[in-house]
Image 1 (cartoon, rainbow, N blue to C red):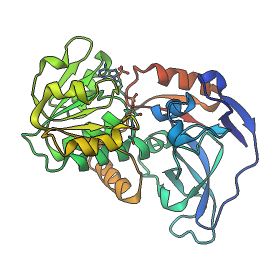
Image 2 (image 1 turned 135 degrees about the vertical axis):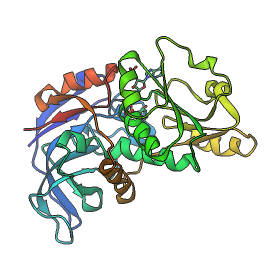
Image 3 (image 1 turned 30 degrees about the horizontal axis):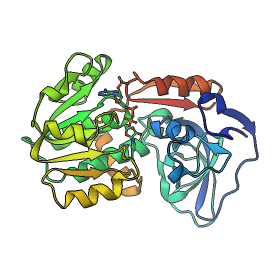
Image 4 (image 1 turned 45 degrees about the vertical axis):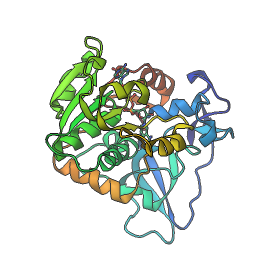
Length: 314
Ligand SMILES: NC(=O)c1ccc[n+]([C@@H]2O[C@H](COP(=O)([O-])OP(=O)(O)OC[C@H]3O[C@@H](n4cnc5c(N)ncnc54)[C@H](OP(=O)(O)O)[C@@H]3O)[C@@H](O)[C@H]2O)c1
């Protein structure tokens, strides 16, 4: 089978395709013929060597964490899934494994049946950012129509799920996006939208109960300016030191800083599938064929896209 791998850290230049045997499966795994996998910023952060504390430096490495496809084989102890099922899922160790392959072996507890009314690219877009968004909502606690929430970087994959989940919860949401995202942010339920190329969000002093930064460019220190006295900052892009530091500092401040980690599971997938049934839409704005993988990663890394970018395999 074909696989996209890299054998050293670097730009998309280090990506290459190789031929390798199909993986064999354990009793609790399924083998899935991959039809699509989605691109996440984590893919290139790992490839550029920015996450070695978690990813390690062992090569070859593969790209991608969430995928959709057709079940080819099932392990002897697997129940509830059969050969031929259309499924989506995520690999267990997102930092060390990858799904940029024609066939992937995965733990059956991280594979779910694909709803018939979404395609493989849409399904492959759910686990990582969908779970991150559902986790963010959990961390927000008791939100209601008067809770003012700022979603900075609102029209990538994470923001697409978060805005629509927030809409189903009801809250007063301000989305910050580039010009091309304004109409999407409105259609996904934001009460107001700020185009970051035209308006400075930092003019909204002490305006928000919750700020979540999906751009990775704001940071807690800056965010405090626009947070109310007892507000919450949610951070999905923490530096390693911020994880323990935030726990300690939160003991002494009324403004709180919480880190978000996406750990896909049947619980979160259930929340997301329910939201889909209630009208959540998954926008995959660009799909690349497998052979154009370098172009796909270059495109995604540049930014400026809406929702998700995916790679499909024939
Ligand atoms: N902790 C976790 O478990 C976890 C899970 C999933 C994702 N993440 C992280 O969460 C972040 C968001 O994920 P994603 O998949 O949604 O990434 P994404 O698709 O790249 O979205 C990021 C968004 O930020 C916007 N942005 C860029 N510069 C901005 C600025 N100056 N002000 C406001 N917005 C700006 C981008 O818009 P333009 O492209 O138009 O500039 C883009 O829509 C990423 O850093 C990702 O690594 C963490």
